[in-house]
Image (cartoon, rainbow, N blue to C red; front, side, top):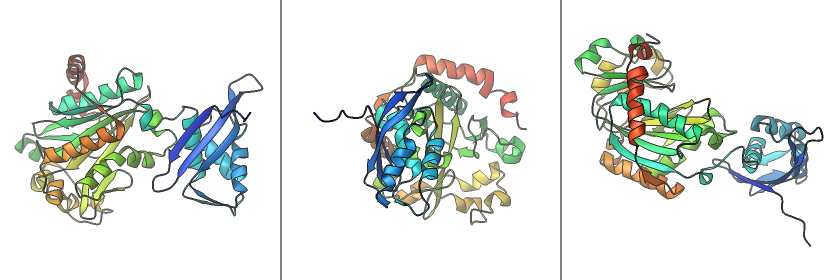
Length: 362
């Protein structure tokens, strides 16, 4: 009779690299406190020299606590490997993420049931409130992980959680163009948004989906599907660390994240579709310091809209994104509930629509 298969199995595909697979068992800690890794077997289509280094990796993991974070697991592997070992297509960090997935400390896309919410027109302040609410729901386990496309009518600027109102906005431009100003819960920069001028979506996911990834890695990981969608319509896009999305013709969008204490993670992106750059620079104070590392002297040149790059209607681009996400992750079309809309409206009254929130950094 053959040996019994290991109890736990985890896989991690390195972005731009190889697949790492980990099979392992766990045993009770001798002190009676928790459990430890045992019978660890790392495999995959990576390259490793010399061959004996694989045994070193397995041995470095054996006996470690199952509660260790990916950083500690990777450090143990790195410490055990001789300096002349060559890892190609993977890393100690990649092995650590696969271990975390095997232990169900980390999850992958296929571990979840996904919902997708089509664009529905909401006031900008309601959209901002929904981002907080739906992230909380996913963290609490009362909503499936969800992709939601925004829609709105009023011209708006949504500033980052840590931005100063007076430093980011020109009050004369705001007044002249009737701009609604909102502050979101995530960091990052200001978003100038008129009806139909950009594409905005929010992902509400459990933090287990990005367990073991650095912040920089998590941005690209959570947007891999949209890069594939853009490629399907002839746009080759890439990430410019930390959170800009660009093509060889210029920046097309930016991402921001917020991680909540209950385990929910908000990741949202705004992409320029047909932006009025003249109006944008009248509303936003975009100084030379901010542009100094972008290789341009003009904010208008920094953003290159998708309409010009694709020639497609905004609705067609959103449809391509939704189709790609649905196909990749078997997502189900859903809608916001009346209770969610009511709660979002309440949060606008008590938080997002108040001067106290908006002016918390004047």
